[in-house]
Picture (cartoon, one colour):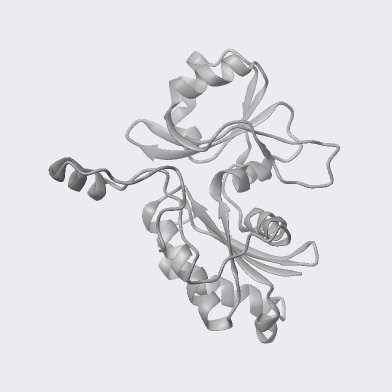
Length: 252
């Protein structure tokens, strides 16, 4: 099985190629360049360096980070995946950002809480655990993915009563609150594990693909979890609902 993974939900632009259960190539950048400048050249580079450029028609699917995350980043990554899907006539696999992030800390004791800065005093997060006896690296969700205030998350984790591993750019804005309010043991993942990775998107995408969760490029969408500022302002002015219900809600 060959899966191309694309991650653009945060500041990291990352692409990876999964071939028969092994990561053949991965390219990640955490710079100020926009993802529209980096993703396609990075894909071209890994396909060329891995000598797979002429075999792109052998891809089984293209997996992409479907949200939550940066609205602009998600749209760029989603558009990139859809464009390749249409051009190559390949299915797409929408991979939720947060469980893919949690996979970075596979095997961690207790639970894993990926944090993405959602602005407005909130983080995008979920709570995950791993079954070490399982042959699958897929994390089990103990909570719904949501945008939540950090103090509310701390209250949930205190009630759960298990050690926590945090990762993601949300750690930077949440650290002080976590240090003050969290009553259970916790650690912040080190630099080599604390950001998104396309290899995890590709791996989780392969699992979903085998479960029959692939879609056509026309069907594929994004899951923002909450409306953009422009949509909130419009809803406030018109008195209409934004229509967001924590489901896939945008066709890119």
